[in-house]
Image 1: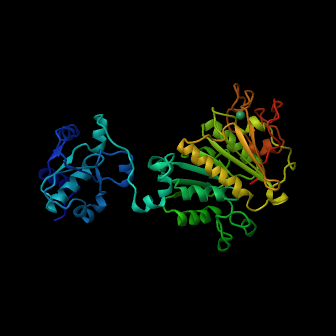
Image 2 (image 1 turned 135 degrees about the vertical axis):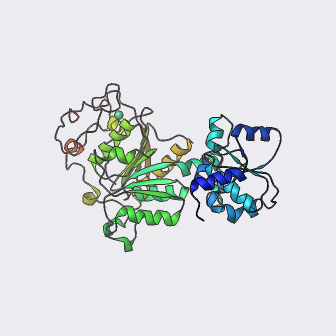
Image 3 (image 1 turned 180 degrees about the vertical axis):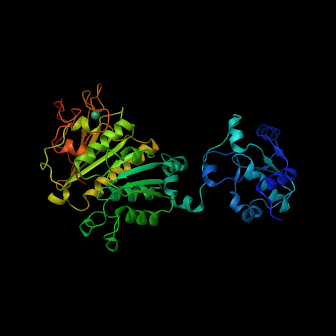
Length: 411
Ligand SMILES: [Zn+2]
């Protein structure tokens, strides 16, 4: 006869003893060593678990428990998030002949709320342990750093010249969530440099092509696709869930939009741009260094800075700059090394001159200065086409110092 959920739970409670978190803690403090069986999903386990707990998600319980706990007389304390899944799991274990099983009422949430100690170290699959083994060997990365990479959420503006190498290497390194904003489809003329895409994907949305490539490289990576043109209307929604923004855009309105949104939303921006044979990259970190507008308060006059489609761009160059962006992103995630905050690297690929420019935050910057006059998103198309916007953003003050050369907008 069919049973309701309530009946199943009530029956389980008659079969399975329950202990509150504090009572389980007392057991452990007395030196008892039950198997602490965490039946939550892997993702829940990674976020925090009882020290030494065995992770065996409920869905795999019957299949794997006999391998993990061969002796049916072993004392087991099963727990989940709130005490429901573990009660059902404990009942199942009893049916399988495990005689000494209890369920922790209140679950891990109750344990945490009672202020009891827990561990947050990550469980690696065999595949992950092998995949990231060269990272594990580096003390600057290690298992803790790899966990940070897998937890990181990085948004790439553009799945083109710069976005391709950046996304490729971030996926390879195990950055867990990669967002891609690109409204375009793959064109044959892209393939000279946009290495995420392939000949057989011409006409396919770039975000879809990129997802295929990145998932094929590393199934750990979650790709979040935004097949839309970034605008003042959608930028907050799109940026919201991400920790770091990587710029691979190819036009001035988007470049100023991305900069301002990062300042307003307090998100680090890993910037890069390329033009013909030259490229540059920097990290614009709100409150820690300058923003793009500190360097380039005003866009160049319309038509003064031709696009890649008009002026051409050397293949490989975006690879160079995109790899710097990927590296800087990884450094920010790990908190390792000295990121390019307040510095800009410039490459001239023909002479192979590489320069590092020092950049200063401009206290008079209209968005990140001491008295900002632009405090919300503006009409960027109008701003970049020379039409003054209503709040005066188009009438920027003279720049106090020539810190760099002309803006390089192109990707
Ligand atoms: Zn600024």
